[in-house]
Image (cartoon, rainbow, N blue to C red; front, side, top):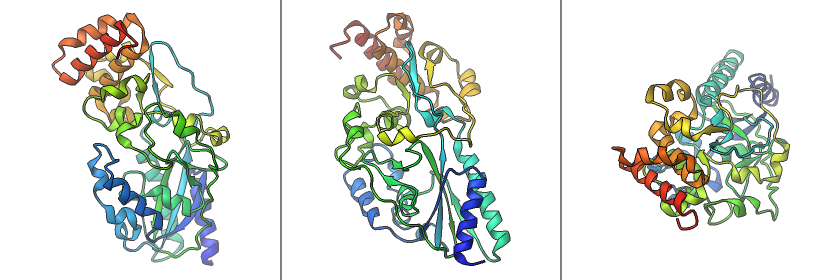
Length: 343
């Protein structure tokens, strides 16, 4: 089998394992990776100190897997194909977070592809990555032809939009690479203009410390008071910059995942949920990442932004909470309910 035929067969295998997009990139340092170093130097990573680890491998995948000669990149759609609507008294959950934890599932799928390659080509080997490895997956995905990095820093595919997960396989087999994707954002800046917290100081530059996804998930302390109103009713992640993207009119429902959660969760129910029930309902979903404490903080904030006085007794009950972050958030939200234009 020629290398070109093997590349086609490898992508076909990935599609058989649920991938909606497939492409092959060269295993080498990419020139755009310099922007990552500049991003770190500007302190745009917020409190995510781990982003400053493994800088060398983020710039060159061969530093992460020395045997790498080619990289298979795959996109798995997580769109449900439906438009979201706000629900009174509820907090919104980003689309990706409504699914079971995708990491182990995608890892198993790519490991099956690797096993197929090993059987077909003696001496072939590789290493799977799914979002948690110190790699710039989106850059390699662009060079694999999956899509381009949009102004909101999300990878955008011309036939799928941006609601998809990336997973990949670095292999020790040299395969012909696909053509890098061209940029099709043009003059559109809807994502930059729509961001509630002004998290984009420039096109393709994200100030993570201002991003609602960071604030509600990665941030372990209080949410900055000046960003609380803008956080609105988001309690887990944020989809605003993707919702306004014209390319997402092409988003289609994926077949790789079963939806585990609804688009929004009742704030009162979430705030009153005991630890055991929280673990039972949200264990194995992305909501376990901010943990119950983080989700409580987010729910209390959304209550304040809701303008709904029925949350007042719940907020008052949290004023004496032993966790100072929760107690302070409850106090802020009570003030916001009392004077919605002054916070």
